Image (cartoon, rainbow, N blue to C red):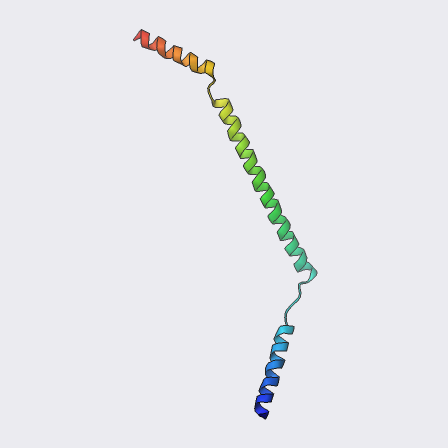
Length: 86
């Protein structure tokens, strides 16, 4: 009985000792985590902005390179003239 009590006592002391060893974050660790969050937020915003610019570029490029009805009609006339000359 006495041995069990001593073993239980030391087990309790060991558990308390281990739980007391948990280290609290210092101000530099807190600042580091805050900077990490800020950097992630900036990265996300930058990615969204880059995607928006990419999309606008593609839309503008497509609008510039698309042939209008007058150009299509002119090409049809050119094709017809080439076929007549053959």
